[in-house]
Length: 46
Image 1 (cartoon, helix red, strand yellow):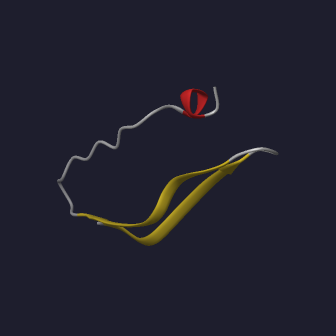
Image 2 (tube, one colour; image 1 turned 45 degrees about the vertical axis):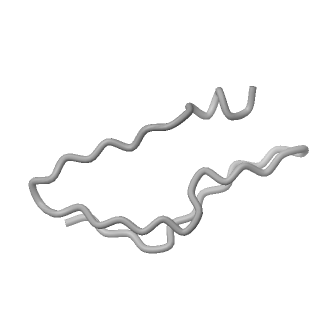
Image 3 (cartoon, one colour; image 1 turned 60 degrees about the vertical axis):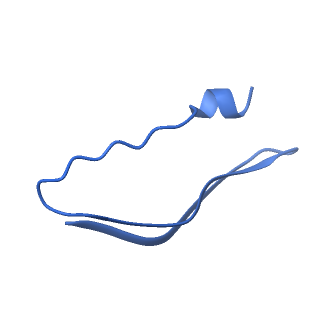
């Protein structure tokens, strides 16, 4: 099992603060398949 609680990730530049994850909790049981999709970091900062 994979488990996380209140996970946060922030990308910062001198001008911008972008929250990629904000208090994400996730539990993945054995045998489950998961895909997490979203914009790439390149697209976020372009």
